[in-house]
Length: 411
Image (cartoon, rainbow, N blue to C red):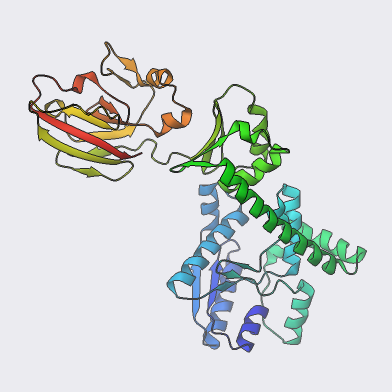
């Protein structure tokens, strides 16, 4: 309400966005009624959104506070975009800075977590970061501003509240100019973060080799770095690997390859020569259909399909990304899916059947390569390990009349 009063006094064109997280029953609804009425009386555009925060938290394995943060910021961003606002402002203040500092310190974090809350982050601005809670309360009293207080702020249930109620008062009583000291610290930490960002960006140019959405890091180059755990933390944090996970990686670099580490979004494989990072497979278990008349498939991989009559001049293309198959032997629609345990095929040029998993071993596929490989099937029979080998049962022979040609453009 203080921030709103300042915006109104400055004559800035604004709207009000209120989130109801449905966590405190009638109290939550009362907050929404209070803000809605204020907006109406002052003729300010009003936007409101209610969330089932507890359900969202359970679905995504978040704490209630993490869920509320995710929900509100996503909604703020959407509202700014759809309603053509320039920014959205939150009323974080200096005490919030200190609370965030200690929360991240207790949890274990890098410089980014310790430098506190940014005054501007994309379209989010926080114009009250200069002011303490006491200064804001004093302003509200002097201006006789109406406001409501979240009753959960008085509880010690949450870590932030325990810091607010016990650590910050102890700091104030111990050091009168604690605010000045923290401001200086935040400035230094912010500068350190910018320096680190530049150094890590340069290091990524040297270490990171990209292949589509996959990243490879040569282990021999990585091992030359001093304090390798620190560098790994800075290099991998954007892939959401936890500090605990990252601390275990250096121990595996001199051991047998094949160790896999997971984050919420990515997997990291310590292979023979490289660390390989790739997105978690979102298409696992999905099946994509290809009709006989279809000439192109854009997702999940790019395939071009052609059918043409076989003649004396027909030549088999030796490119592994091209499969030439006997059209009459196929049952449509064809299916495209990832490999599963127990899958087998009859490799072209060989006698007898072979498990796909054994084929992968023979061809020295890495774990990531196995996971990225697709199978083309006719009915339940494998026609082609896409980009690698066709099945003997579908090869061209003397009786072939029509060739079905599939070309892999992008894996």
